[in-house]
Length: 147
Image (cartoon, rainbow, N blue to C red; front, side):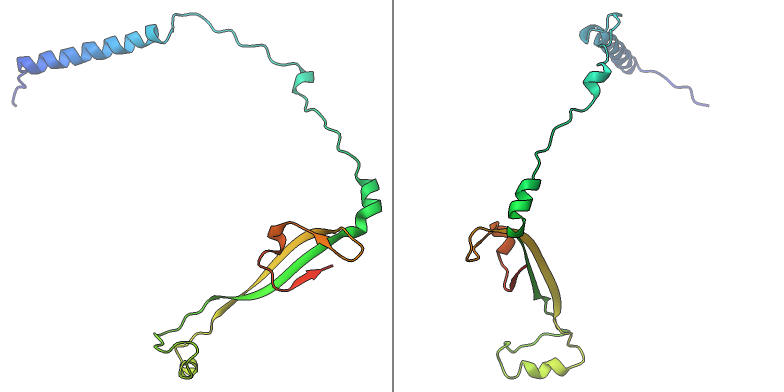
């Protein structure tokens, strides 16, 4: 069995690191104020302070009775082609008479269609049917239905 020999410089460096580490850990209590004082907790709030405050909501029933028929529903349903892909490269443009020839081949897959629906609300503001609504409700709609 071989005996481990400590070389003097390695021993000194190890001892210095251990002393520095011990001093550093001991000094953290002094730096961060851990001096043995006890911390007293704050008193808990009373039950009256912890209850949520109730907010009175205004009564809209007279407004609904008077103007309720003026609120309208705005909807739209549209079919869009989401992705048109083919099983191979078609060298002809879509408006070419030869483009349609390749639609009958077995590798062709028809375009994927997606039905999109939009829904919003509006308010009739005049006797001749003017409706006010937010712009995002009707933006991009093609077939608007108001009910």
